[in-house]
Length: 556
Ligand code: DGJ
Image 1 (cartoon, protein in one colour):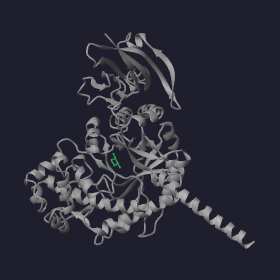
Image 2 (image 1 turned 30 degrees about the horizontal axis):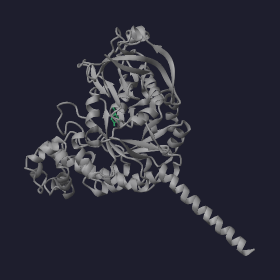
Image 3 (image 1 turned 120 degrees about the vertical axis):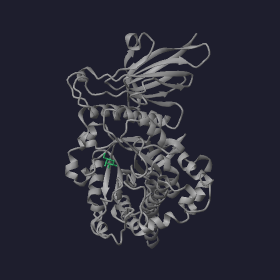
C-alpha cells in the first residue's frame, strides 16, 4: 500500500516537473524576439514573424484607461494590430520604491480584449530631451539627481547622464516594470519596449557641468577606442572623418582624438547617453528579455549640434550607440519630415533593422508604411497621435493596413530578400519615375496623386486650399512570386515593363485585381483593355488602394 502511495507521489512530482519544464520551454520560445531573415531581422511573436500595423498614442492618452477606452474601436477600424503606448515613470513610482502598475495592467487587459499587441515606451529620465516624466522625488532632489548645466552653471530640466544615481534610480524602476510585465502578461501582449524617448541635448551641444567637463577632458573610454579600431573600415563617415583629423589617435581625451568642435561634443554626449540608456535597458533585460529599441528626433537641414536634439540615436551616431549600448537591439527614427525615403535609407545602413515608432499621421502615412515594410523590410510602422487621426488620413491608413494584413504572410516570406521592392516618390520636387529591376524585368513606376471624385471638390485640404481637395498619396510595393509572376499593391501607381534580356521585349499576359482571403488569392476583375492601356501598363488607380496579380512574358 505504502509503495503505491509513494510511487503515486513520485509520479505526481515527475508530472509536475515535466509540466514546469514544458511551460518554461514554451515560455522561452514564445517570448517576442528578433530573428534574422536574409539581410534583415524580423520580430517574432507567438513563435512566428509579425508585421506591426501600429499607431502611437498621444503622450497623455494612456494616463486614463477610461479616456483611452473610447478609441479602441477606432484602432480596430484602422486595421491596426498594435498600439504603441507610453508608460510614465512619475505615475509608476510616485514614491521611491513603491510601484503602481495599475495603468500597465489595465492597458494589457484592454489590448488583449481588443486582440491588439502593445509596444511600450518608457517615459522616464528623458522625453524629447527633457526630464518632465521623472517622479517628484527625483525632480526636487537635484543634489542626489543632478541636472545638466549650461556654460554659466545654470541647471536645466535635463538629468545629467554622468551620474550613476540618476541611471540607477531609472534602472530600478524599469527592471520592476519588466518583472511585472513578465508576471502578468501571460499572453505576450507586450511585444517590444523602448527605454526613454528621443534622448538628447538641445539648446546646448553638451552638458557643461563640472563632472561633464572633467570627463570631456579625460581619456576617451578604452571600450570606445577598441570599437573604433575593430570597425575602422566601416565607421559612419562623420565619425571616421573626425577621427582622421587626429590621424586616428588611439589615446587621448575627446578633443585630442576628435578635435574641439560641437561635433565632438555631440559624440561625447552620445557616448554617455547611450551608456546610461544601456544601464537602464540591461536592468530591464535581466528581468524579461523583450526586444528593445531607442528612438530619435531627426535633424532639420542645416541645424548644428545643440540646435536639434543632439547625441540621440541618430544614424551618424550609430557606432557610438552600438558600442556603448549593447543591450539595445536597434535604433529607430521618428519621421515627421517629408523626405521619408532619405531617413529610411539612413536608418537601414550598416544592418540596422527598421521599425518606425512615430511618423506624421497625414495622408502619406498610408503609402510610407507600405514602402518601409517592402523596400527596407521594416518590422512595422506607427503614425503618432493615432487617436486623433483625421478622417481622410484615417480612411487611407485603414485601407493600407488592410492591404498589409492580406499580404502579411507573403511580405514576411520575402523580407530580407531581393524579391520585393517598395514604391515611393523621393520628393515632391523630383517627379521622375522610379526605376527598379526584378529578375529579368525592368519596371518604371509613375506616381499619380489625383483625389477620388468624391473628394475632388469643395473639401479643405491640409494646406487649407479648398479648390483641389487634399493631396492624395501615391506609392506601393511589388513582390516577385516566380520568374514572370508579380503582386503589385498600392495606390496611384502606373507600371510599365521592359525585358532585361537582349533582343526581347516585355508584355503582359494577364493582370487581375483581387484580394487575399486567408492567404488565398481571390480574383475580382480580369483587367485588360482600357485598364491596362491595351496591354501597355499595369495601373492601380489613384484614390483607392488595390492589389493586382500580374503575369508578364517576354517576346521578340
Ligand atoms: C516626438 C515625441 O517622441 C512624441 O512623444 C511627441 O512629443 C511628438 N514628437 C509630438 O509631435
